[in-house]
Amino acid sequence: MTQRSPKATAERNRTLDLASALVRGAVAAGLGLGSLTVLVMVLWISSPYPDSGPGGVLRAAAGVWLLAHGAGLVRPDTLSGVPAPVSMVPLLLVLGPVWLAHRAARDAAEPEEGRPGPSRAGAFCAVTAGYLLVVVGAAACARGGSLRPDPDTLVFPVALVVAGAAAAGVWTAAGRPFGPLPSWSPLVLQEAIARTLFRDRAEAACRSAAAGVTVLLGGGALLVAVALGRNAGAAQDAFLGLAGDWSGRFAVLLLAASLVPNAALWGAAYGLGPGFSLGTGATATPLGLDGTPAVPHFPLLAAVPDQGPGSLLNGAALAVPVAAALAVAWFTARRAAPADAPRAQAWSTRETVRVTLLAALGCAAGTALLTAVAGGPLGTGALREFGPVWWLAGPAALVWTSGIGVPAALLLRLWRLRTPGWAWRRDVPEADEPPATARAAAAVEAEAEEKAEAEAVIGRRRRWWAPWRGRGAAGAAGDAAPGGNAAPAASSLPAPGTAPDAAPGALVGAGAGRGDAGFEPYDFLPTDPWHENDFREARWASLKRGSGGLMADFPAAPASPVDPAGPADFADPADLAAGRPAPDPDRPGPTP
Image (cartoon, rainbow, N blue to C red; front, top):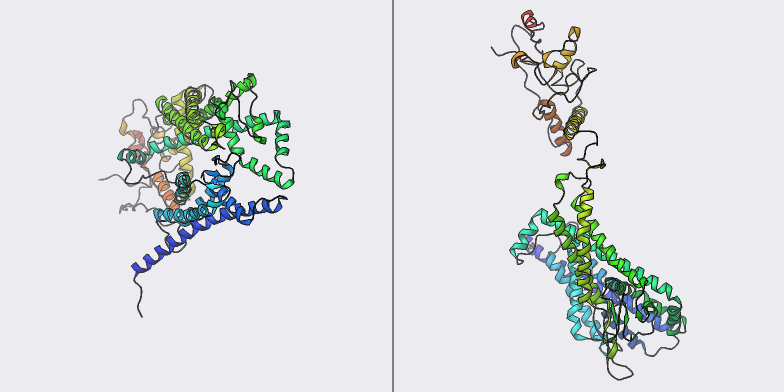
């Protein structure tokens, strides 16, 4: 028997993974097409007056599915005999195909348990190819139907939408990394992405831009809801006039629901100022509706303002871009001056302005992209232009967010960095406490907490005559002196008139003399305990706890040589007369 080599097995597994990714892409496209086909079939069956057979329904469902990817459709059967384009994409329908392609690519790029998965590029290409195979089949099926796809739109934007969703899925499977860029990208960008500071600023700008776009969409939806509430009678008449049976009204309701995101973007463009087109000769702005609009009979279009100059209520729509600019400023200022970071880590004024402008640019780009897909032609003649104009809405969003967002971000940064009454900042002391005293108190408090934690971790039994190991022996001896005369080692500063070598064997520290009634923790200079034995043991215990028990115990100190004459249990009277403290029995004796 022959045994396969590991290289052949790896190649076979890689081929199987790519084939599985291809099937995943095809299944994702089939699920989206099948679910939409079932919905169209249910509406056709429930209709009392069907005008085509099952074949026509399947072709129409394939056309609507391609429209959900951004493809342009052509309606050949018109009263004038001229084919009419239908390019307005219901944005709610886009969510289904995009989510399915994203999920298929994410699952294909994730490695299975027990063996590595395919490469990211391979998973992306395989899923995209499998999805586009179904797209080509659906386009061939819908070619003879009532809604025929435009072949020029199958590459752009259909293929671009599928590739973008698959790339987002692969990026999600990789953990959403912000870099590194591919090797073919410019070297300047690669070096910039490699810097942590650049990544932090870019992430903050993207978050602020997303917040601005979200506020614009929410404000636009609010404008549409208010306008529909004011014209509820006209919307009801349009809804009831389009269909007389319940199945037709249900179909109109589904179409109106799928166009709600489009209406929100129309409202956002209206609040920004450029407004939207209602045909080739009419434009609706907060200043008024100019021209004669060519408005179809549809419930959502009842929110269109009346002809004539705008009123004060129409001008209130300008509050939407103001709110978006303030949202951009707020999200930028939160990162520029975070509340849980020291003042030294706050951004400078130039960095704050730069990130705010970058966020405004991102908000403008997102607004232009969304408004470009929110409208489109619905026919020939006056309906060639219908919806917001993206090349006007994008610059308007840039002007609003940068003109208001930059000053607002700077003011919010100054407000968050203010000193008086801001006691919840970590680096701001109390109002009646000098900064140097506050820093000294914080240092002493942190040192005490660290020592308590070290003793809790080490678990050594403290001796009653040395409450602070390593530094409190001299302090304890000073406290026990008769008459209240403390030893010279009770403080880290030598007493006046005392030589530095007056206590050669004493250990000084911040913990000495803490039991005195008049002890003041700010009357001495803090010492550096980093190299002391207790703190070394604490650091060693922390590392051992973090390693999960892999590290050994702290090495014990080498035993001091024992004097043949025995340890000195009693102090020399000459030393006591000279004012020198008794030697510590735990420390080695003087070197001869």
